[in-house]
Image (cartoon, rainbow, N blue to C red; front, top):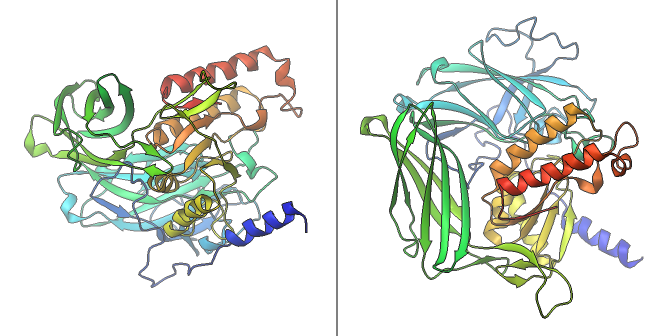
Amino acid sequence: MTPQTRLLALLTATFAVVPLPIARGGDTDIPRPEHPRPDFERQAWVNLNGEWQFRFDPENEGENQKWFEPAAEGFDRKIVVPFCWESERSAIHDSSKQRVGWYRRSVTVPESWRNQNTWLRFGAVDWAADVWVNGEHAGAHEGGYTPFEIDITERVRPGQPAWIVVRATDPTDPELPTGKQVGWYTPTSGIWQTVWLEARPARYVAALDIRPENTREGWLVSVAADVRGPDGPCRLRITSPDKTVRSPYDFEGSIESRHGKIIGRLAVQEPKLWAPESPHLYDIVVELAGPDAAAGRDAVRTYFGLRTIERSRLDNLGHESVLLNGKPIYLRGALDQSFNPTGIYTAPDDAFLRRDIELARSLGFNFLRIHIKPDEPRRLYWADKLGLLIMQDMPNTWQQSPRARHAWESTMEGIVARDRNHPAIFAWVLFNETWGLGSGRDYGREYRQDQDTQRWVAEMWEQVKKKDPTRLVE
């Protein structure tokens, strides 16, 4: 046995999966019950994972036949969300390249949400989703790796059952960002990340952009909050249980045309830096309130790590280095396909995700490159928590066209917005091995003569650096 064969056998044995029971009718256990976003978590939420009614639509006739109506017949199968329909854990386990699947289930919004707005949230649906609530079309989304949400307040009544129907389509098209789903590995179709309901007041925090900075005055953390809701003045308050984070901080702002942005800065005393050997995290709570106390206060729990990433040539070294917190770091890592036998893209449970990171560290790695796809947010959370650097790939198309570029750009924007606050991510990888940069069948070669593609790649690099100047971009 060669050294390479022995290593492959070791890795195969080390990363073997022990199948867990699949939730079926009558079971009280909900698969993947944990909150899917520890980096952006509200207290009032309801997990919608578990059994949904399901049917395929091979003739693509469901919309014309109004399968979105609650009384529609033909939903004769059960699927376990959040596992794709090709996976064993979904209880469908169909790899016949079905392209359209319909999901349906009844939900009841808690009575306690009467004075709140109800949002329906999806971690990811590959590739496109249309959503109906009680027979009315509520929203749609394209992008197999990016989250989306729909305000369903006007379509549901707290304490009363409501029907949610999702039509998922997955063409696995080479002009769409699909990574290795085209011809290499098993496709991932339909819902493959957690679905949940969430309560918010009318004014709420839509997104956060957290940027630590080591300044002459010490460590400062910029917290930019994208806020939404009725127009008018509002106040952002940031608190932390850590006494070295000087708090509370109050920042005034306003919402105009239902959008606003409030930027606050935190000072951290006696800083503890984030690094693989000491992955210290600071918990914070970001609250948004308007002038009317009766309208409620939105509260989002999140965290940050103090660390800087840069590339530079130090005087005492004859080569350029990657610097973590100003010091060269020798990168020891692996290219991680991040698939598993029974869930495919979706981990069987949260313990599996944690164990993956622990195993990588035990093998001596200090980073993983997640290959040609953004991973589940909870995997990034465990990398943050346990101390493992991550290179995050964008999923690539296989062909070049205006449609392919548009789909790639939309996916990139969603991934950066979702994941930019994870201290573990130290680099974005935009195009794996120049995939999708050629034209026609000769992808990966013609880009060398295609000045338009070269300009586009440079523009995308500039865009990502502008969206996130805190990391390396390849």
